[in-house]
Image (cartoon, rainbow, N blue to C red; front, side):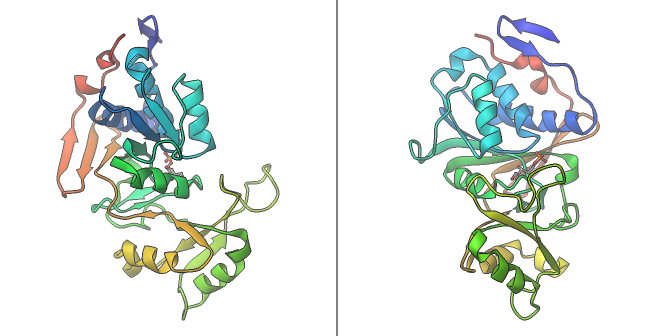
Length: 276
Ligand SMILES: O=C(CO)[C@H](O)[C@H](O)COP(=O)(O)O
């Protein structure tokens, strides 16, 4: 590890998937977290630590009058451990920028999110932000939802309503999912279902290819079911999605439909970090 200044550390280079995640995250921070941005939403997942890493590397001076809103327990820890100022949506209802990961993104920037069961808070902070940016590795860049992320659309549901929702999902004449199951804690974790930061359960529901072509229709029909708290389909929300590629480049997909290939440039080298 090289030290760039007294408080900026240039982390060791990463390769493979982790390197791709970091490239996407750093590119997004360099392009969208500017000194004038003061209220920033931090998403959840394994790509987001690189977002925080890059924000911290911008230096104490620029970060001292910023606040950071977390989308869950994990991002709260990242903010606190990064020495950044934690805040909540009750205090700041309008954010400048939110950056978050995604499980899968289609060419129209519709996203499946909620692999980490944080989709409710993630969507609140995405919606409240002037700019919502997605960061991911190349595996998430997909031509059609449901092809790369096969475990289904995460649906946060009130525990009281999970059984009727599951039944409706599995009934061909109701919600007609191909499959649906209550997400359980992994072995070695708590016995029983995954419980979200909001005390709810998660059902993962797989839909047919024809349905994934219209993710907004899936979203609307699920949100009309009583007991559904939030659906991990983010449609028409992201301004840009950055995907780190295996070769060290980054693909940017814009909501306008434009695609940009960002080469291995100085733009994403650690030395570009702002020093105090
Ligand atoms: O939606 C999420 C959590 O609810 C995450 O953003 C999503 O699962 C992506 O995570 P990762 O960066 O680990 O691929």
